[in-house]
Length: 193
Image (tube, rainbow, N blue to C red):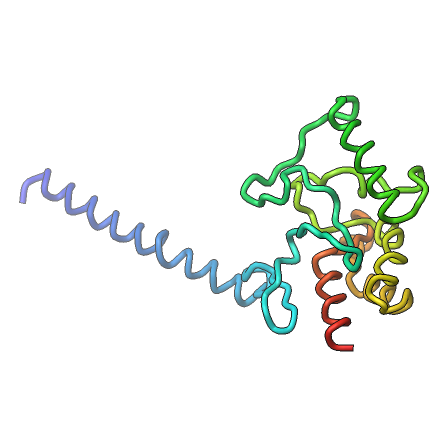
């Protein structure tokens, strides 16, 4: 076999080995570790209602109706394919206009004074699809949801508590309420009292 043939054979063996290692073994290892260490997250963090997948706890869902908790406004009109922030600065007229519009809508829907509305009820998150809201935002919505569902404020407040994520390591960030899991819990509570 000449030098060209030996080099070609070496290159083909290298291609086969790297394909097996990087194309099959490594992805299988990562998949297996994901299933072992964090199966819920590796499978999409699915939220179930009556045994059927209803969404992901990582993504907010658009809400209409009085019986659900509203997530933050979406900068991408709930299109996960275009997930991104609005990239609007605090002095841009379009952001100020959107916040003014949101403030009027929230004040009417929640029957509160516009000055008491938490900022996260008026502005979109960095991804435009974040399901987390502040405790203040959840507590502002509690009377409306309790009345609309007929579950009572104590029951709805307990569901808020159960769906509150505390600060990471107890000091990084602030507690937040996941609206996707909270709304799924509300559906469960209403269908299975």
